Image 1 (tube, rainbow, N blue to C red):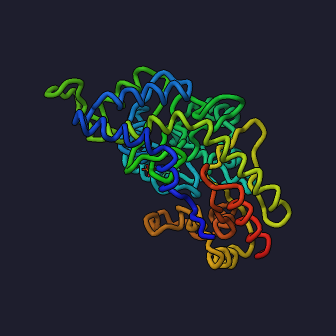
Image 2: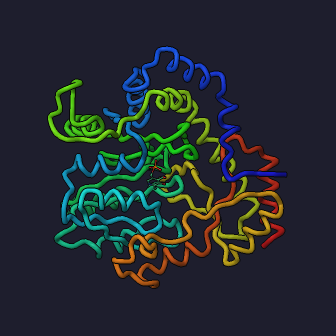
Length: 363
Ligand SMILES: Cc1ncc(COP(=O)(O)O)c(C=O)c1O
């Protein structure tokens, strides 16, 4: 068997008629920029999340940048996040002149350790960016209590958690959350795309203008903004995917359960925290002999991944932080042991069993 970590061709084929229709419709009416699919997608996605406003944008990185700008986080502000995320999370803090501050993660769920968060807060701290990694949300009630106590803003990085829930509430839990629709994500564009959702009108209006040169009409810019727009083709391609999202998340959860049943006791399987509905963007196991297992699976035709092999504080880009190995021991330990197994809605039960059996034989 040959099994990819994520198989985008199969996703496309599962939605081919709807997606082909959407693409030819947009090409046919040539409304490539600010076409009606953009606002339709914004409305449909925000409604799905139970939010009043959706602001489509170019990708998940600029979604974070826009959210920080909307909240007025700027020069010198300390913003706390985790080192085990994609660099986009911390880059966005630097874009606004903020200071990136990392806190370590808890070993079980590999999410922000909220006890350590509280200790990391200083008078300069202005915001927290919890990352709902792999499809599972950080304990938001607890995080919001801490944020409130210290008057901090929160932006939830939901790039990996489309369709996830906590205590029955869809991500984001708090007021403002940013999503990526990078092709391999739970919902994936045919290129780059992103969206921010919020209940606050003032933030929504500001972010909408920021995505489009600070203007409300063609030759009238109220302030300098960016060209961070979501393009019509991507919005049109994403709309049929949104209609499938709940079904896809259910299938991801089913496959995760299937993996859990076979792998339990052999490797460390993912945990779902109480109150959470994990959407399993990634199914991440932990094992001491990760590299060896990865190689054995490759030899059996199975692609795997490591998300992420180098914690951000050890990236050359952040050498100037002078954070040596040992600064965030839990994130560093996890980076050496984690392995993402293939998991996507089109993966068959037979394929998932084959993957799990290969892991079983290898460890
Ligand atoms: C946690 C996280 N944040 C932000 C991003 C950035 O999203 P994008 O690649 O769409 O810019 C990604 C994905 O790539 C991500 O996984």
